[in-house]
Length: 112
Length: 114
Picture 1 (tube, one colour):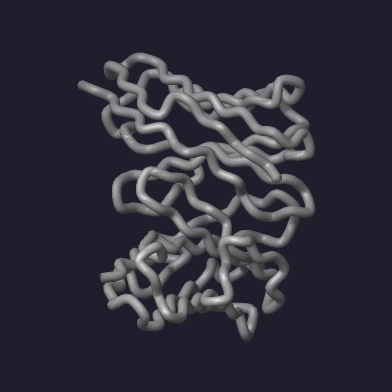
Picture 2 (cartoon, helix red, strand yellow):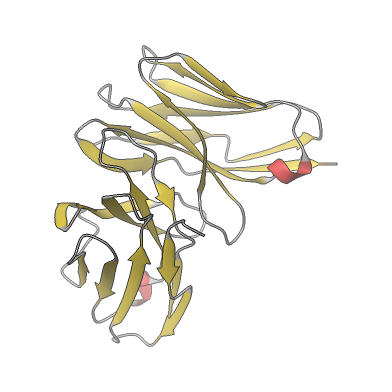
């Protein structure tokens, strides 16, 4: 089955810096890759997603890139703010298999 | 609030007891998913429904676990004869039925087994 690895497990940046979180997946049939932000005690919240027919998607300060050949995708957050501090999860799924397979999460800490 | 709602938010019970959780999906969503999340880990898929049909179950879902969605709206997840290892956050999500539609999560039910 699909396996998703996520790095780093923790990431500390100064406010205003950029942050990059990377994920790799194992099954080349995976074609949908969402990113979720989870604050302590709260629900995972979808922040951006990308499908395999595009290589990059951007939404304000957040962007996701996908390299299908290498089977990896990355989350980029620019101009980080303290409220970006949370745990971020990547996930993958494929058409016909509706479950999301999640990475192990990255704890992002943005210091003022 | 028209998001996914789950009840209860917290459940504390003794080992060996049965527990039942409820999930109400976003009203127009006909897919409903259950995941389990332990501390420091990402959510793990348990099962999903399209309307009232349960279409996939994970190997994680032992025979002590049962899920239902009798009218294609809300769903229940029951755990019988709870064990310490069942302690986790149980998350529900819903989505539209089209391929690769975003899944929206509820706040979860945190289960603690004494």
